[in-house]
Amino acid sequence: MREIPDESVKVVVTSPPYNIKNSVGNGLKNGNGGKWPKAALQNGYDGHDDCMPHEKYVSWQRRCLAEMMRVLRPDGAIFYNHKWRVQGGLLQDRSDIVRGFPVRQIIIWQRSGGINFNPGYFLPNYEVIYLIAKPDFKLAPKANSAGCVWRINQAHNNPHPAPFPVDLAHRCIQAAGGGPVLDPFMGSGTTAVAADAEGVEWIGIEKSADYARMAEDWIAKARSRGYDPLR
Image (cartoon, rainbow, N blue to C red; front, side, top):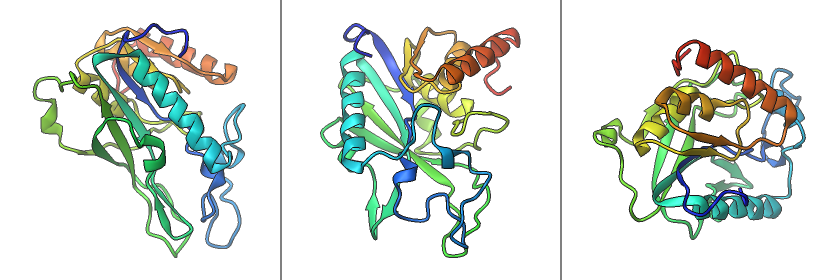
């Protein structure tokens, strides 16, 4: 992101690693104390173990958000997808990450729940999106009618260990009223596919060569199908 000029991006749509393997709770464990073998994130990401000390993780994410704010236009916004969790009996709501940034609203992403192997917990079926906006940001006409609870199913048939759905990225881009769009955690290319569907320019950053190739393949296939974001 340091190579991107100041105030050159209209909207950031991103979902960083959640540091899920740092969890002191059940995390990816099942009710018997073992690991759920189908949970791909038990091995972390390609090139990132997803198990940083919490303070180091928070510092990293705050530096990332600061760079996102730098490249954002005065009328731009960040849609920052993350997940709340309980740690040591306290809610970890990511306030230590977003504190001091201009959070305008919290959007609840109500998703499908998958499978819950632990009878001590209700099935988790939501995540949050922080809308972090610069002063001149306004939603596109009629975008506010979507409300602040978005019912969108999880991504399926995606080999990335933690994909988010194209429809989610597409809604963010539409609500912001266009691009250029930036995703500094590109992963399998979800944001790029959604941006292509809107016909706007995008920038994607991904450290994993395997995920970058995955994104290139998916973007090429989506383009050959006419930019349908739901295919």
